[in-house]
Image (cartoon, rainbow, N blue to C red; front, side, top):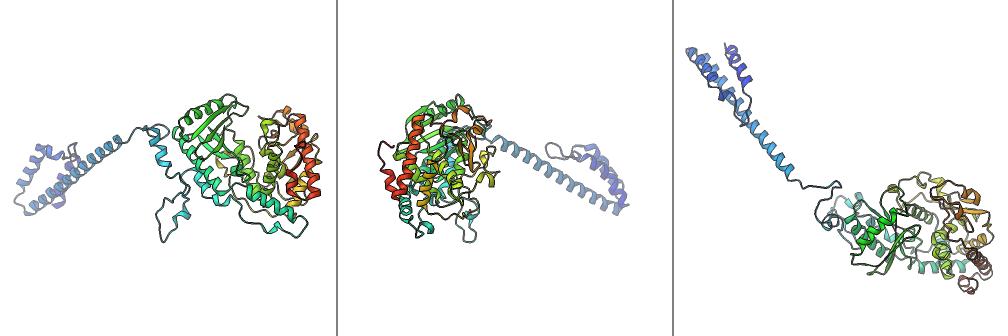
Length: 496
């Protein structure tokens, strides 16, 4: 009897008790159904068990109605909350930056601290060292600021003095290198300028990248070195004749309103440059556009400088020597600093036995090639340590550097760091490369390790070339007889 009474009214109840839009059950809205159900209960009123069963059914229906009512109300409430939440979102552009004034967006989020000491964003914790888990970097320059203490050489190497006749010359080279190298303070000031420009440019051009390249980052810079930067628009080459000028013109207009920039000048050369000066710190800046090879060779030079302690002092001394004799200026048809660095590295690869430096292009083919994605390059990457069997003192290596190039056959061979060897000039002329021009391989030929052009193409004047070669020969002769570093800086003006 109980099963019959329960099953009979439950079937229509289940079919009709769906919540409406106002959260009430449809069974409450159907009086005919309710009256029929009530009449059936009155006919069986004499049966006590039937009354009990009906009460149970009524109670079950009430519970079910309450359940649907609550469920309907919750569903309507959640729907309204979602609508309010969606409508509260601010309108955003495709690059995810809000439409608020540009200074209030990127600059607010990223310009956390322009000062040198960048604080950790994580609170102090006595149990977990969060700083060791997550590097506290806010912008690209912050990562290099974190390593600023490693850029200046402060310790004298153990192999400087070996008890030979070269010790005095080696000590003089090291002393001049220490007093001329880029200090940690100067490096930090350049990083601070980079960060200011990085944030300022990214505020208006969020998709642009800004890289600091050259001797500042490679470790071969001096106190008077300029700041070289690369504006990266996209990770492909751009037409330097038209596109690069257009992009640099936009930056020119932007920096005109920058309070710490002065003496802006756009130079429309084969590789256009935007030159300006930081009026607060007196730093001279050269900004190019999408000359990505500068990022690659900065990475390469930094890694070579970390291979052996003798690399940095030799390159810095050779640069100082070239500057003293006015042959370190590509604009005046002489040798660029980059070409001088490649000459020293090539000599340490091929001009001595056993070699001082390996060929990184052969050891790390996946890192040092022209197809490697720029975004994956870590300029200050630490490679596996290299231990050379060559133990020659610094002074002897400097002398042999000048002797090597005094007898070098410049008319037949080019200098190649990529191959760690000499390469016939005719072979370099015939290389198929986007930037390679056969007419650029004339007198002094130094292969660019990535785009395979001649980095010394500025030496196209035969008289300038003869002046350079004569100076190298005279320096080698003078240093061999005197073993005095100052003697190579006191050569007659007719020689330089």
